[in-house]
Image (tube, rainbow, N blue to C red; front, side, top):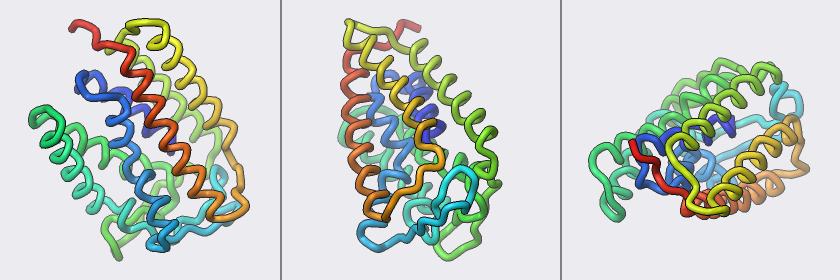
Length: 218
């Protein structure tokens, strides 16, 4: 899942209007931000296996530290506490940030085949939505549309940048997501390098667009 994770980050702006959208998206995608780093370091393993599921050619051989439920709970609490300590906020910040990190496992549990670890070395589960491309697209794009709608209801543009930077970002994510369906990377480095570059661009772009928007009055 990709834009489904982003959808929850967008929706969380309603709960944490003072937190940058970039930070909310980092929390929602934390597992996928940590994963390419660990793959590049050889700590976690993935294999290119066309046909592994209808939606993706990747076989997630081992990713216990970035994608297990127990570790994501710990990562989520840690991220929330760090943000509250060095930025601002109350207990709600910790709860929402941790919830966004853990939500990654829940959504991946729905989409992945049984390869999602509950804890390192523990059982692996998954419902396999990725075995159907139409069903996956329907679920993720519906979630993304809902997330965009909630974000737009929670914020308003302060200027043209706030209006158009977010609109282009949303269109880019939706189009890019659909265009990437079934794409087979030629190598593992060709998988994790664009992932890291793309994450940096998304974080900067979402921060920029959100900086030019303001929370709507309740």
